[in-house]
Amino acid sequence: MKRIPPPPEIITGKCTGCGLCVKYCPALVLGMQNKIVTIERKEMCIACGHCGAVCPAEAISHPEARAESHLTVGPGPAVGSEALLKIFRERRSVRFYRPDPIPREVLGKIIEAGRYAPTGSNSQNVHYLVFTDPKEIDRLKEITVSFMDKSFKLIGNRIVAFYAGFIIGRKSVEFMRDYIPAAMSVIESTRKGEDRAFWNARAVILVHAPAWDSSSAFNCSAAINYCALMAHSLGVGVCFNGFLENSAKHDPKLKKFLGLPKDHRCFGAMTMGYQEVKFRRLVERRSPTVEWR
Ligand SMILES: Cc1cc2nc3c(=O)[nH]c(=O)nc-3n(C[C@H](O)[C@H](O)[C@H](O)COP(=O)(O)O)c2cc1C
Image (cartoon, rainbow, N blue to C red; front, side, top):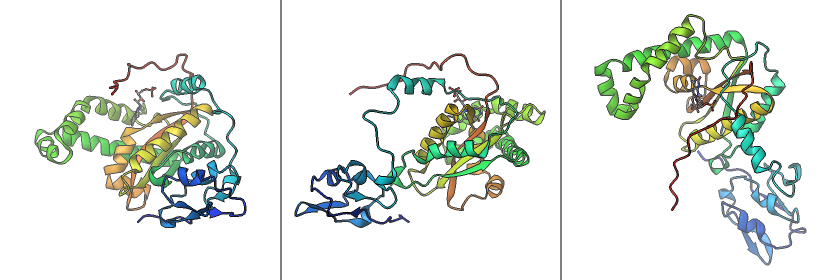
């Protein structure tokens, strides 16, 4: 199952034997012999490129993460902590969009941001499915809403809820049942033409990855969040969509429509469009629950 990438390439003539690459390789691929770096366990390489990123002599590089093709890091982070925090606090869920479509190159830039999100063992296993055709988005919405309708009606039945508790856990069942009135109002208003499920999105992106990889859920969440922040910086508003994500996880009809690889699972979805009205205030939240040890 594990993909084995090619090993790093060493230019021995340039290697000064400083040992930084050996120390920084997280996968213990490298060793040192006669003050020259050597490849000891090439099958362990995860192609992260840390070796080339720390080498002061440009003596090592990974073919999939070529040090020389990467921009050099400046003396400090590109954005200061205050500016970064401001970006985080500016981002809000955007549910009302202007009618203009999002050009493909803008969507490409948004997805490019997800590319740089971290993934477990550097698997880079996040896939993107992008919908921009209004008819396709409508069909996606229709299938999603119909599945949500069926699911919430089912879980509203006491007998079904009792048995579902053994499968998905009592708390999850209670959580779903508490959500029934809100879900039903979303479904009803959407069916009446006021789209509270997909918010008349101009584009929809789903992220999916192999279900068997225990890092996939995190990988997809990190990637889609990077995309959301990039979207914000490009003036595109996004709203994560749990309805769509959950339906894509569980509804065979939707899975078929999406055509994801058989062993893949959807771990995130968002609706998108140019923001209709700008928010005037930064986000405020409760203080985090933190335990210091
Ligand atoms: C996993 C996840 C699923 C969400 N699903 C929906 C959704 O289906 N519909 C929706 O309108 N908002 C959805 N949201 C947006 C949340 O309601 C929103 O993030 C939260 O209220 C905080 O508001 P803010 O994002 O503007 O700060 C979702 C957010 C997350 C993180």
